[in-house]
Length: 251
Ligand SMILES: NC(=O)c1ccc[n+]([C@@H]2O[C@H](COP(=O)([O-])OP(=O)(O)OC[C@H]3O[C@@H](n4cnc5c(N)ncnc54)[C@H](OP(=O)(O)O)[C@@H]3O)[C@@H](O)[C@H]2O)c1
Image (cartoon, rainbow, N blue to C red; front, side, top):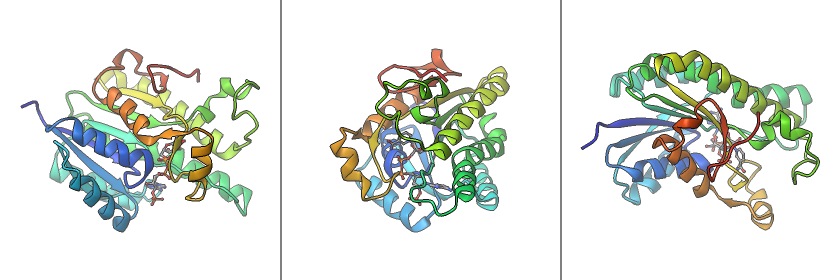
């Protein structure tokens, strides 16, 4: 049997993180997926559901709020004690604030979760990632973070302002470029990845139907594309901003 591979997915109880956790666990008996969740209650329910589907690999639950440094420290300590290594980190947790009451809080909270969280978490996990023979980091970004595309009036989402979210993902893309530059010399591969427009809870439960009506895909399509990256099928594109179906975005 191949060596065990330890994969941490943040925001694993819902949407893309949930489907990615299952896809990665189902892909190989060697895979162990740590489901990082800020709510242990939601995480326990998600873990139970995924285990009931009997994936070939294994899953476990870890409390992890990417905006909370004490849960990050405790999570790093627990992964260190339980596994002593981390092979792949999927920085998936993210928010999109609708109906914000206060502009400054909307922007800062969005940046804190979508940008600062992934960078601080990744840096805290570096000692464990450096112990892997094949370290991989996938930063789940968005087409809305492409500065190039912001000027393209032909895009269906051109009319969506979403400044806070767009800024947070553009900044996550820069964090990806910085990670790639700093980590590639010791063998880590880093990608920014757009999961496509898919049906999840990102813009609220009520918005799920609207997403379906607009032709959004299932989050399983995003999970399948993340699995391709985990499985080495896009290694030649490390350090770039990739999307599903073998395609790429401009930064
Ligand atoms: N859906 C799309 O069409 C789409 C398109 C482009 C990019 N994305 C990106 O895809 C990623 C996943 O989103 P999704 O669409 O799957 O939405 P989702 O169903 O709302 O899932 C988001 C996950 O992130 C978690 N989360 C939020 N804040 C967190 C924090 N501070 N610490 C830890 N976990 C936190 C949520 O936990 P709770 O359940 O506790 O809230 C949830 O598990 C996000 O980065 C999003 O920006 C999605």
